[in-house]
Image 1 (tube, helix red, strand yellow):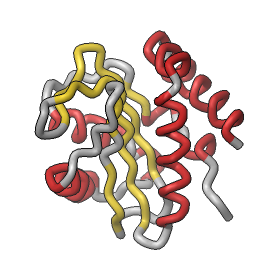
Image 2: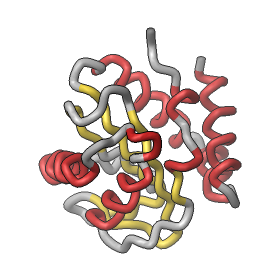
Image 3: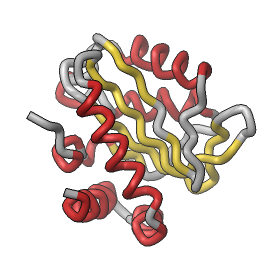
Length: 155
């Protein structure tokens, strides 16, 4: 069964005001929210895997958006954590500022589902109106609703 972005969205895994000032701090802060319902049993190991991947090749995609991720045996299903930073978090060798950070943990076997998820997030976050609505969302519920409405249009 193919993954649907709307099914991965969880208000508890959305941080609208990241306290982090560095990439590492942001990843740790977001991954800490992904442990709801026990989906991520070893957040420190996941952090290490995501950070190692990020150091090999930045996942900053421009327009203030980054998709740090890890294909890992630490999860049984795709998990998504989201952070928003008004000030921006420095990502990549050029120090570009990411304002929206989508951390994805995906089981090794779910490559196609992972690509579907990232593709949907990339299309949504590349749309100026959607990014503006995400920036203006006052609650995690509003933020998730924007993504859900947008993901329905992609199906």
